[in-house]
Length: 72
Picture 1 (cartoon, rainbow, N blue to C red):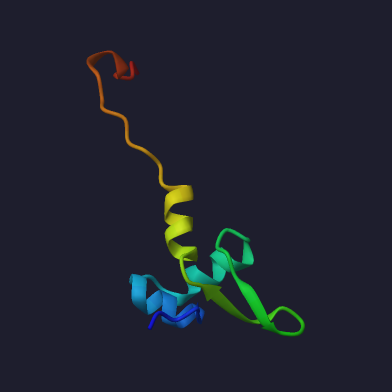
Picture 2 (picture 1 turned 135 degrees about the vertical axis):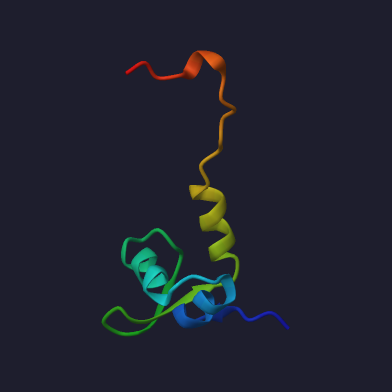
């Protein structure tokens, strides 16, 4: 069974990043989340939120061409 909500620590362990990075993304409203306690405490991340974040903020690489060299 898939968990519907996970804590910042659980998400950090699952995707392999520091929990402080997850908390930063929550604080900056870059990662979908809900609060389960009054006063904006105890954030939980819904399933699929990390995948949505990765899709939304992925920068697409462009192949380098000979004309794109910088002249200095």
